[in-house]
Image (cartoon, rainbow over all chains, first blue to last red; front, side, top):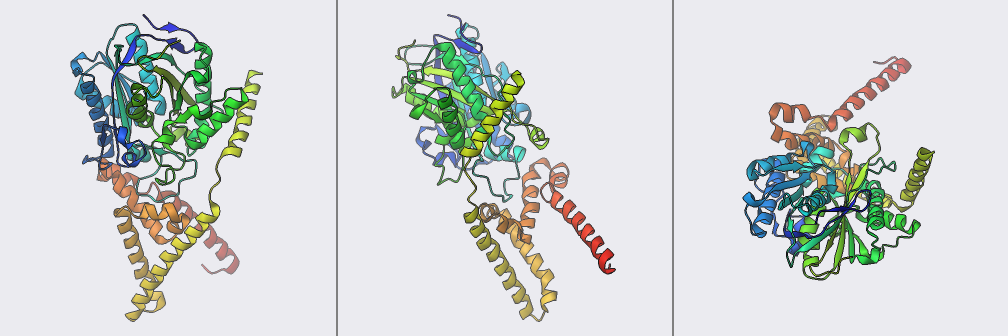
Length: 342
Length: 153
């Protein structure tokens, strides 16, 4: 059945399944609380590559290869590849496509790109052509640092609201649902929300309104209530962003409570690993979903999950010129194989 | 009208952010800065005293001491230790001459992957550049004021 539009940015999809997922992370992420859920943990950030950009690209390639392999098919059977990353001209996604040679749609919505790709894949698969779509997102701490901030070895003190860009990649293969697959039953593509935040070291508070807007749109369109979901995971709002999202919800009578969590808050031991507000980066929500969240759905510990990856759509040039930070969030609702669907 | 409402929402939100944003641990940072900066100074003093043992005057020993400290700062940066020191010590690690060495060597290491000309050559001063520009400008202004007041160039 084709996808049905049920709200301004919301679509209901049926019979769209996740055939496989794969996640590879860096050494720091491999010491975090989710370490047992990842397919592979790199021993070093560089991974014997001559540049960190190459390392990032390789992480994406390996992760996507693994997802395709776990789906039990070959690259030849993948009809389309969707994905993105954080580097200028999304080079990791584009360069990785030299190898797999499948039709590619490179996407950019900063750290929200994984749910953008997953949601788009669900719409395409629901409409039957293409039928098998691979999605992936990646970020590398050092590559992001040198593009957005300072050289890695430069000493400077991070503010308490700063996020740590994760070295992580997550990928999934989406296709027609068969019994046992986690299914995608709804997608809400967000709009750009900018409530005037300007501090690039505090993206959590810049992105929280975008996450709130998308969640609100999603609930309104689907008629779902918060308790219909066992968990709502935002992408990389971190400690402060989640706190603000809770406060925004309360103002409008949406009580998220303990169901609301965040991929960025979950990837590290925040205190012990000295990451302040939490993890960020496209690889954060991609890796946490592909490794951990998908597993919890598959294992039947959760019936339904709303994944809301969040992205801050600024560049070093725009914040140096004093512009505020426009943000976006895309939501994908996922269900356990036998979960009763509304 | 819609714009005014939107800007009110944004203003209210920024007020909310202010109340929720965690404060910087100023006292802890100050203590660490004092300890780290102090420790670097003590090391520098030790090196200077070492040179004086070999018969240099305190003034003569200043230049070689600076050179040794810059060398140590560069070495620690190369080993990946200096950034960890500054993460704790803040300005205590940035302000001494070793911090300047860190600001030069870190970009040199980082941009090596783009080659010697467009990488290291072009990006070497990305961090230290502003410090040099405004440091030299400030020195010029102060020197001018001194000349106007005292007549000594």
